[in-house]
Length: 365
Image (tube, rainbow, N blue to C red; front, top):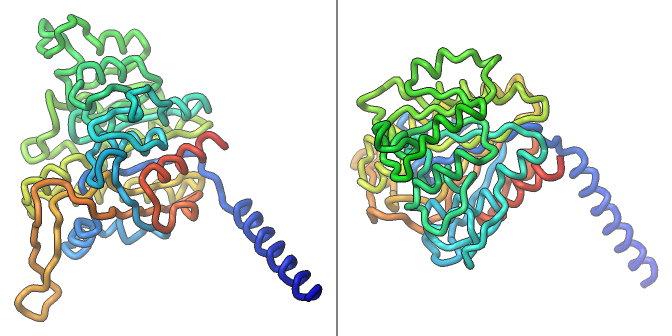
């Protein structure tokens, strides 16, 4: 009996030492890029790959699944999901950066700024939309986009690229703010470079540009009408500006309109948005090959449309899509990881746990 007891102790100690050695062997990232495919479930990723517009999804080395429920519902919305990433705390649907009691929460951008990291947000929606908003603002309802724009302009963020010009300008300057404030002029006084179109964004001197806000449309992007609005180009510019910081950076990139096309059950247009998202993934993955301290994460806030892929009539690999809803579903969403620290992002986890793991990497640098 004594021999068996000693043997058990030895086995436990061996396991614990192995865990400690493994933890020490995991390379901590200096910089993190979080890609959000809004509304992108497992079926959406599968459809992108099978339709030859998702090749970069296949390049990830680690991954798992994320359960997306909010504190108020099994089926979440983008606001609650983004708040869970940004704070590590679950909250109610439509909440931005606040808990169930509407108390302000500490945001991921604040943690990163305390560590001297540069920070950036990119979205193909208005930049004040739910997902980007939750990284820099705290309001009780996501629709308060004028307040979100104000908090964004006063935050520690270094780079903003998206739509939503109307939320930053007063009516006298052809915006829709009723308080008369021109937030872009105020940001200029804080050394922000202000950009209004893609051509000017691409021509920025990235070595000299420290802070930039690029509002490239009045509302959300219309990528069909303006094909120059490529998420891949925006991602490349952002990385090159932010990566000058020796202390690293955090960048969130959202393919916002995957969700919108799934709401419409428009399979073709959803694939168009996924292709744009996939190209942006390629930019980051290529960059990571030369920057070994970069962690790239890909996930979604929720699945939209209840998409199912069914076998076609013949024996080919073609399939027929089937939608079950025009709303969100409660299906789990993919989590993909590559680069430094990617081993920490495998398995199945709740969405707030994903947020806590990202924040922990930033806090414990």
